[in-house]
Structures are given as structure tokens and as C-alpha cells.
Image (cartoon, rainbow, N blue to C red; front, side):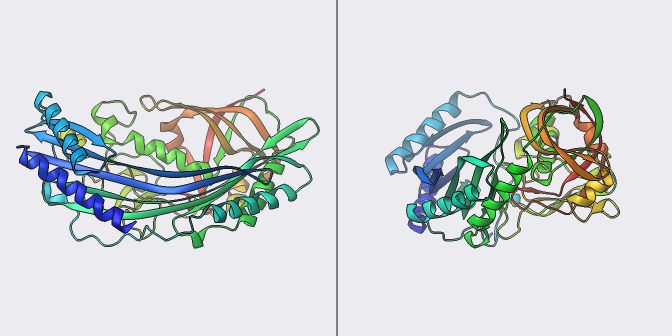
Length: 445
């Protein structure tokens, strides 16, 4: 991996030098590379073995405030020079945009420390197959009602990112990620159900064992047997921690610069306003060593830093690239490329010890463990998705639920959050526990 990284850094620097030689007023170049393998099994037989190696160099050339971009997956000197030439040719014909250009030089990520995102891992097909087969074997034997399998899957990938620009900044970091998952199919009577479980980490030593993943998947699948719809109603809803991060992902989209300057978000002009209850805050830590969404700099080379996104329910900041910031008359927040390690925090007494305690607090309502479809409109905030989960009464799960739709508006959903539990799911860039909402419309039978 190291020789590849050194070659990539050289290619980025060569592209920038070529752009300068052609008379560009500014330029920026990024190169991402990944390699690894994925192995899938089904019914304890190897089904697929895939090797992946992806990478490309993208160059953007500026002539004043006109820009052109081109890319190449060939890192030979000739191919890089051709890409620069193409980008420069486009820049010569592109209309000037007063907001285009590099991020400010003073914001570049100079002197950053190793983010500790790379861990060596066994990437042999034999090892990957061994992990997937072991997982599926335990899964199929876990319960007599498990009669089939949608397979097990093990993957291991590593790579790096290099970014440089004509400010003289060149930065890079390596990363890795491993995962293991399985999906059993269970049958009771004439009806079948399926569910899944997975483990994911940068460090392979932090993965759950194949046996643990198998047992979790089997238990989740068997628990869904006998699922039925419920009558249409309005009721409290809990989003399980494995899904709750998605609500805050929609929030991130609603406060992103692109949607703000296009006026295509329901949270337009909400900076400094109350959006969530006062017991909820969101903190971002881009520099967390080994974090799944850690990055010492964003896709424009801007240094990332810890910041509060929401404090006591009040929106503290938008998420801005340099272009969006100029459109809005503000400064970039280092979010070109996305968010970095969000931690959604709740204050007592709205923080429950676990999911069981949150169900007790809810009393009667729907615990959602699966969502389907993409019925979300960020312009209006309207939210409507297919769902499955469990009906809860008197704080206890009564029966599994399927074939329902939950609906509301994100503005109301944010404001009507009642509590959160401490069952944080660490497998996402947004880390939060399960979330209880006071009321949603549930369309069923």
C-alpha cells in the first residue's frame, strides 16, 4: 500500500505543477484508491469471491473564477497531463462564477496528526471464506425454524485519499474497513420472515465473532415470525438505534449549504433557532482516532475541528463548503464531503438506560426496527416510509408488526422527541441511541 500511496502523492503533485505551467490561476487535485475483497456464501457453500481495486485522479483547474474538471484512472505521466489539459480546456470555455475557487489558504489542514484509520488485515480469500462459512454454519443451526439462508458476507478493504491544491497544501491519510454479515430465513406455518445482523470496524480485532453475528441474526429473524399488520392509528414511535441515525442524517441534509443556498430545505433561516427539545445536543468530533467518519481535512483541504452542531436543541452551525459559504456570505465549516463523527447526546431525565427502559417510558406504541422506501421531502420535511417492528403495550413487546407505513413531518419529529436510550450503535458516522417520538401516523390494515 505504501508504494501506491507514494505514487499517488507524486501524481497529484505532478498534476498541480502541470496546471501551473499551463497558466492556471489555481488548481486542486484529489486521488482516492481502494483495494480489497468480498466473499459471499450461501447454504455453507462459497457463492462469490470478488477482488476490488478502484482509484481515480480528479483535477480541477481555475482560470480566474472559471473552472474545468477532468479525471483519469490511469496514473501514468502522460494520462495525468492529458487530464490537466482537458480540465484547462473546459475552464477556458466555462462561464465565470463569483463563488468558485479554492478554500482560503489560512484554513488548510497544516500539521495534522495521524488519524489512526488504517489497520493491517488478513485479505486472503481463504480467511474471508472461513469467516463467512463459520457465521452461516452457526446461523443455520441456531433454531429449527431457520430453514434457509440469504447468505453470509465478509469483506475487507483498505485504501487512501490524497488531496492537494495550489496553496501548497498536500495531505493524505490511509484507512481500512472490515465487515461480516448474515441473513437467515425462518418459517412458521406458511409464512416466512428474514432479518440480518452485521459487524463492522476499521480494526479487525474489534469485529464481533462469526458466532456472535450468527446468533444475533437468528434471534432477530425468529422474533419476527408471526408478524402482522395493525389498524391505522396515531401512536408513539421508537426508532431503534440501528435506524435512529437516519433521522439525524436527514437533519444533516437539511442544514447543508447546497440545500440552503438553493432554498430547497425546510430548515432555511433556522440558524440560532430551536429545532430539537432542550435536552438534546449534537457534538461533532472529526479527529476521533479510528472513528468511522474521522478525517483531518475535508475534500477541499480545510482543517476539520470539533464543534457543537446543536446545543440544548438550538442549531449552532450550518454545514458549509467554501462554495456554499460564499453563496451565503459565510465561512466554510469544513464539511466538503460530508459530516464527521456526530454524537447525539441526551440529558437526564430524558436519557434511559436501555431500549427496555425506553419501551417502559413509551407504554403503548410501535418499536420500528426496519424501514423501507425513501419517502422523504427535504423541501417540505414530509416523511413517509414503510416500516416493520414490534407493537408494545404496557412497556412490553407484544407481537411483531409488518406491512405498515409511518408518516409525519421532520420538523414535528425533531421537536416531538421525548427521550433517548443509551444503546448507542457504534457502526455509523452518526452515533445515537434509540429515539422515542411522541406521535406519528401509522397506516396499517
